[in-house]
Length: 166
Image 1 (spheres, one colour):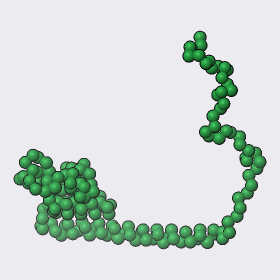
Image 2 (cartoon, rainbow, N blue to C red; image 1 turned 60 degrees about the vertical axis):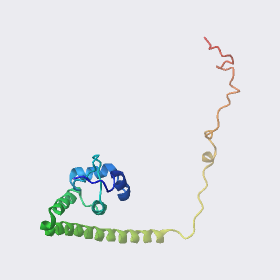
Image 3 (tube, rainbow, N blue to C red; image 1 turned 135 degrees about the vertical axis):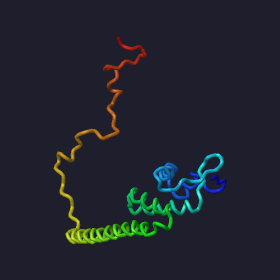
C-alpha cells in the first residue's frame, strides 16, 4: 500500500529526536511494523507511528532490554488477543523499575549520610599551606615559551649563506 502523505524518515527522525539509522534499525528488528511507502519508495510515517516511536523511546529510557521490547511489539501486533500478555510484560518491567527506584533511594540516602559526615570533618578555618623548601622554590627548568638565544649561537654550526655546508 502506498501513502503519499506523512512524514519522511528525516522529518520523523527530527520529530522523535532519533537518527534515521535508528528508525531503519527498529524496522529491521521488528520493533516497528513495516512503514508504508510513497510511490517513489520512500518511507512515510504517520502520527500513529510517531506515538509508537515515542513509547519505544520511553521503554529504552527505562532500560527495558531490546529483547523484551521486541516481545512486547510482537504481542502488540497480534492485537487485543494478547492484551493480557502485553500487560504482563509491562507489569514485569514496572516491578523491575520499582526495585531500581528502591535501590536508588537507598544509594541516595547512603551518599547523603557520607556527605554529611565529610562535611562535619571539614575544618571550619582553613589552615595556611606549609612553606616549600628553598630548592623547590627555585626554578630548575626554563619556563615554557622561553626559547634559547639562537642569535648568540650564530656561527656555531649555522651559516648565514643559502649554500649548504659540505
